Image (cartoon, rainbow, N blue to C red; front, side, top):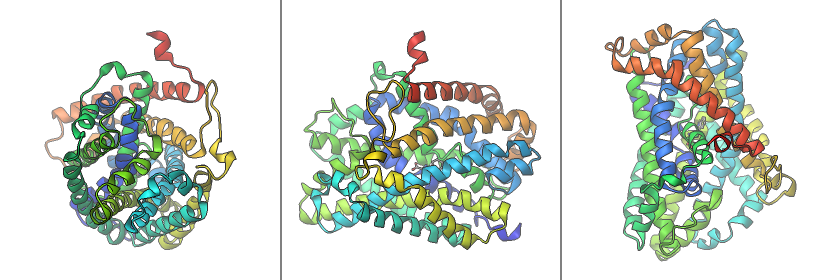
Length: 467
Ligand code: TRP
């Protein structure tokens, strides 16, 4: 096992895991999901899910990984439950799907960094043309995947941890600077109000499903990324406080990203927040225009910093997504790390091609599927997100906690947690974790998974039909 590598200390693990959590999910997806979900009501649901449902899932994932020192599929097997390794395998597959489209969006961000650095503020109005120009965005996607593969090939401490320790603080500094700036803009308070003052009549079943998917996606849960990172953690570390720090970092950055975004959106719309549903194009279409108003020098500085920030955030996440299948190949199939990294990265890039061309270039992938009862079609990238992020992650979370509570058994799980947390046994935290993984999480996640699938793919809303 010695050559499997590991984080050099607790800070290294937290930086890497927070780096995995903080990504496009926080800065690209969160703001437009909030916009689509009616503002602050969505934020409330999201926070609730993160702390109440996802936190116990995170602890279980890390504990399984640390106990076994294995990738998700190998971990279930190592605990003696070979039949359960399918959960790990589905997770790995799900991670591959996520990285395939994620890398495309990361490539857009990096492309925007380049464009804005050259002063091309009109890129915002050319977003559609930009995504249709498959050679250019394809090149950016190649660059991004190569950077990801390079970092992962350097190993856990020498690559993943080192990159996170540099990228994460830089990111925090840039984002705080941008928040301060955006709060000084005209109409900023209208944006803040939309973001922070909830209108609970806006909580529909759909908002609930979307908030759940977003919580899992944002925390990198449900597919074994944290089983994998957990496998590089030392037994003397306290899993509960680590998980709390990771959750706080992730939720904190998402929250701050909202504080930055909505004043900018309000500024662009002249204070009108009645229709903020930019969808995936929100940051790409709205922001360049805002940066332009700052003038040629400041606009280039702030604008390029912003897209650099997103690219950095995305990079520590793509690294974690790539690490999962790589760990699987290294552990289970004894392939050398370096080799596994480049082969898998190339493979995932190819799987991502339909997402790349499905944003306008290829009519087939742009209008990929029309769900039962739906009015319009869904492109390939959104289709993958509906399957992987919104459906499979909560299902994976449900199966993982169920496994922890009833198959591996909570006594064993608790013992693993207690290794780095002397007062854990008999504490309130233990009581909550036991309750959550035995009853709350499996039931709520299982039910919400079914409802999400019925709603997303069949336009059926059981909750609406009942109430
Ligand atoms: N959490 C990351 C984000 O918010 C994305 C991510 C990285 C992820 N690793 C993951 C999502 C594993 C799900 C599972 O951008």
